[in-house]
Image (cartoon, rainbow, N blue to C red):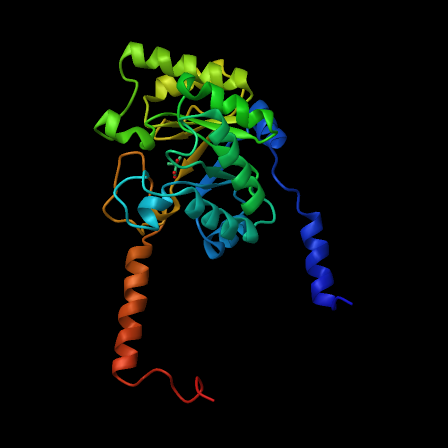
Length: 280
Ligand code: KIV
């Protein structure tokens, strides 16, 4: 028999309305902005979900902020599934999307389907994200054919960083801007439920958000889109070395944590911790 607390918790949880792709579309349609952040572990995801975030992205930026790699390329499908599983365990409301990592979907649509099915089955996530447009159309269609919601990602696509050679703003020239708009239309026609636009001029992002019916989530794409996403370590001020113009830092956790660590080290060294009340 559950005790009263357990009963109260499960009743509360059953009252929480989970975010779905339909709700995200309805948010765009009524002009309500979508708030999305990344998370890679249980504890952070629990706080984020409790705060009422709409979408959590288990981004392959885990390769940078969790593993310390220079790019997103090294992270593996198994590692993404590990992060996603930890995040999903914490969630009661948010929609959880997982990046399919580099090399697990581009080459062949069967592999794309296999990778998505592993992510959905093993982690319990609600959708996947892929980078690219026309070039990966077949993979996107294959994943969608299995009933897996797909989020696209255009503009600065970090998995192609060695092709770009730089993290500079993308699609500033007309040719690239036209290709991006075409790619967004292709992803919409395929049946993607949303698209991330990274680091492109805000005028172009506005045009995409107006011309494409599905939600457009921006990062460094200006205010005229349907929602925003940031990497959680960047917005919390944990990563200090990454300070692009588009980043708004909402906390200085680097300083907060350093202060706590300094105090702890000092307390241990000075035999101030633990005190009598903290001992058995
Ligand atoms: O991996 C990631 O965190 C991302 C966001 C930057 C959109 O793709």
